[in-house]
Length: 368
Image 1 (cartoon, rainbow, N blue to C red):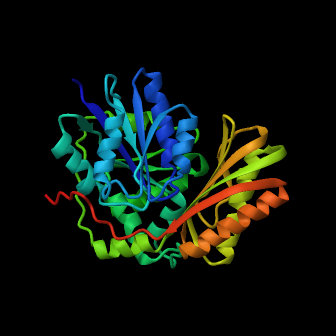
Image 2 (cartoon, one colour; image 1 turned 90 degrees about the horizontal axis):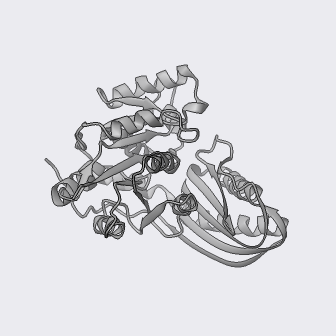
Image 3 (spheres, rainbow, N blue to C red; image 1 turned 120 degrees about the vertical axis):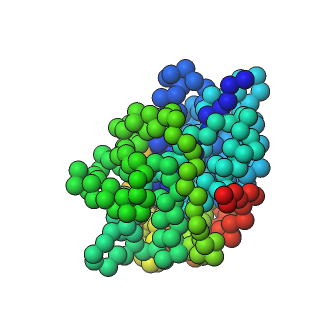
């Protein structure tokens, strides 16, 4: 029996991993290969899962813990893709505040399940907006995150087998080269590609590295779990789900954008720092997804429904922000009701889950 190629794509919150994985999946499917996708979050109701499923992909979700702490759930989720027609490729997206994945996921998979999985080189996608601030030199850097959260960002880059500079379509050549220079200091000798997950530019080069004979998991980290835990705990997480009823037709893209924009404005007003803010609006078989990836960014409709709908609509908010999670949940709830009122939507239900991630406790950790 041939092995399933297991592809792990890492990167900080808001880097564009889900969009990149969607592009990779489409290329594999076009090549006649069966694909399974595994998403990951600290809680249920994940926008990324709904996004990928709406594109027709088979998606499993590991919720309630990162891959390293939920290793057994990761394996059981991969098992559910199996049976008579196991996938040729599994694309897995770890939660964006996670690092030390070589020691806690890649090498354990190789050692324990190497008869089933062939591990691809580990790629990490760089979020340019935070990369410029955290990796920059010269003037005082103001990323908006603590040194502990910045530590996670750097460690993600250090353990990559190859690195990808994301949002190539939004960067000039000089900006790309500046980021390449910064990355060469953090991860010397590591291959660096530039890629646009949104329009697909650079995807062929990424696939070339994924399918290359390069060994996976070559860079074991030396990592301080106290600093790592403090960095994760800085972030407030909110997953909110609401069902509303629209008596009159409402523009799904406009609703997603309005909700993201209003929540983002309130976060900035409360001196919070956005790592990633996502809203999914689902009506019938149509979905709109809008994002903010930093305090300075503008609202981006990453997936357009291009449709007006009446009737039952589901709203999902995923917020990852350096702010108190209880305050973040309160803001999300208040703005949801305000936007619903302004657009004459009846709010039928709202459920929300807020947290600060706990200390990482990996199921396995290979140290040498």
